[in-house]
Length: 109
Image (cartoon, rainbow, N blue to C red; front, side, top):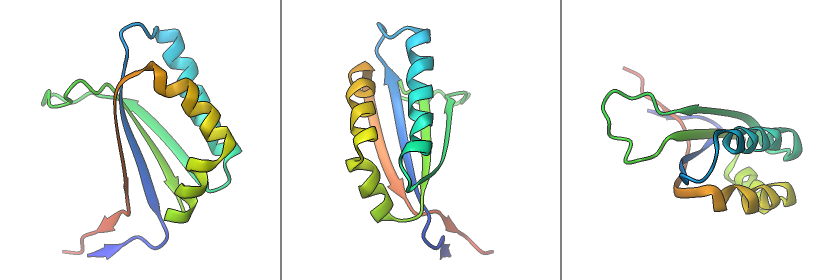
């Protein structure tokens, strides 16, 4: 197995509160995506809604994935004023959240 050199993925699973409207969710997603232009160590952003047929989502409806060059980059992102400001708007709209950071690993068969 081979760990990706210098790449770290930051994955956030979210369940929005029932009171959060679809328009609010759309604006929050746009705000999250804009961080890639505001926080230099954040290299990419992707998101999606749960479409699994397995029904094992435990209520989580949205997935957000950001790519960074290093763990130091994630630490810089977490402390960055643009992220802090966004988090203060985003987090109160969530009923549930899970965050995982990992280094992608390739399995050579």
